[in-house]
Amino acid sequence: MKASDLVTVWSAPDNSRLTAKQYSFRLPVHVAAKLAALEELYPTRSRTQLVGDLLTAALAEVEKNLECHAGVPMGHKHPETDEEMFAMAGQILQFHQAANKHYAAIETELGNENPSLLFAANYSVTAEGK
Picture 1 (tube, one colour):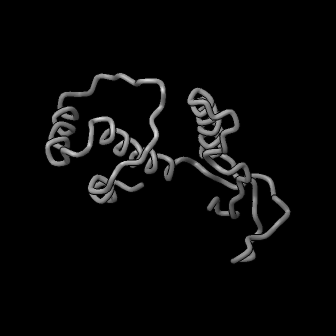
Picture 2: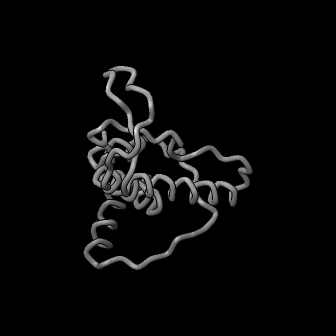
C-alpha cells in the first residue's frame, strides 16, 4: 500500500484481522498530534486502524528500498522477457524470510496451525536484481 492510497482506504470498510498480542509504544509529540488530527478527519477509523495503515504504507516504502541483488543462477528464464533468472540475495531476502517466520508464529498464535507464507518461497530476480 502506498501512502497516496490511504485516503481511499480510510473511506472504505475495514476487514483486517488483528494480532492477539497488543503492541504499546510512546510517540513523539508531533506524531501524536498528527495522528489525533487524522482521527478527527476519519472518525470511522480507530486509532489502531490508522496506525496500522500508516505502518503498512511506511513498511512498503522501506521494503522497496532494501538492498536486492542477483545471487546464483536459477537455471530458468523469465517467461515474458526471456532474461536469465537468479536467486534473490541481499537485505530483501533476509526481510522476506524473517517476515515469513514471524507471520507463521503470529498465525499459529491465532489458531492457524498451517499458515501460508506471507512472501513466496521462490525468490528469483533478473541480473539487475528486479
